[in-house]
Length: 550
Image (tube, rainbow, N blue to C red):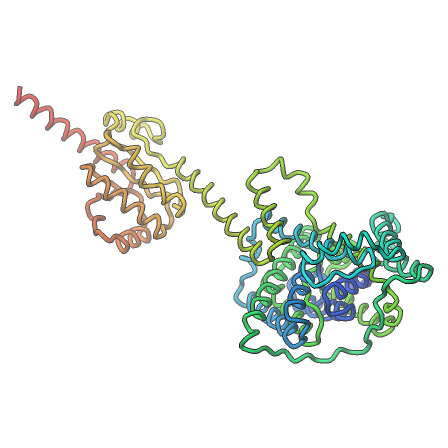
């Protein structure tokens, strides 16, 4: 494949220019919200946008600062007291971790995070962004970082607003929420809101503005940490790396659906990691695949990495030429833009339909949302993934236990001869057909299920492993329990259809070495014949003894 594909050059130019224009107000807003300053947001969009496109695995992806990444970075910035060496050490390390995730092909696993968990933490992040910006909308700055200080600052800001800032902020919200779609094809709503809000501030003096914005190429920040700060930096880096990976790969899936292509998850992670590493070295905020900018890029013709790289060049030209103008942008304008970003991140579509789906998924989504807002993102995602996995295993186990045969009559037999043999056995032979792989969730109750179904009736049981391709320790212990209980109760155990790999594991893990007491057959029909013949012999012997006694 060609490293650069110029077959769609015209579309890529239009897509890149448009995405760059859309990214400008968002990069400024994200930079200001992060604590590192608006220029750090612009440089983050430039570095991550350029290198993630150059080395990434999604042609039409446009990367840069995103809501989730900025929320986490702002928390890190506050925790590390804004120390550049420590803060950007976390960003550089996060980029290196993302590269390693791609090198070791972990992209396919990151995408396995369940949708309710993704929906919950994305919606939680949307709520956090809105909470952090409400005070700024009223012309105030919240004391300290984090969601709780931001929420507690809102009542005071509402009671004592900066009227001009509030008017400018409300005007920004009005523009960005009601901007006509027809005009949006020419001037994107965030850019229109930025221009109109800033111009209105010329007639409404007194609203806090950004102030001087540094120009020129950023200086290199040498990352460093001490033994006391290493754990904090590492935890922050892991959170940024994982969140950025999830955010980027979700955006890549959206791009796939729109372009009918298939991205390379591992290559995408490597590209994102390189972008974030470079961004951290130059004091820029981290980023990820940005869904809205990617959608805009695709809709205006962008298809290859050229579009994402060009978007970065557009922002570079802005830094070089328009920084003095950007210094006059009011905080309330950026707050209004970010409130719209937070609103868009909240999964309102799912919330409207959630009551029609599984209740457990809704509960899981709500739990992750609450943990995201009031605890932290790592706890929210970890708890969500663990609970979702446990719920899935429980559902799978229940279904597996339902499907296990346990028949001693004609209910589930598959051939006329088997039906006839079971009828002859008169309930004294029970067949257990394991319908597929045995999960550890099903294994927990497997022994109990077999014991209850054969209690006081079967003289022989047949274990059909023909549909079991593999077995783990939990299932092996359950099979051992079945054999031990059956032989202790005087029942004969037969097995059929067991593969060599499953047999090796069962024999290797069998502590009591009681696997030798069962008889193996290639097919279930052969096992049934042997079991029924044994039953007939025992029945004949019993009748003979009864006749002699008489």
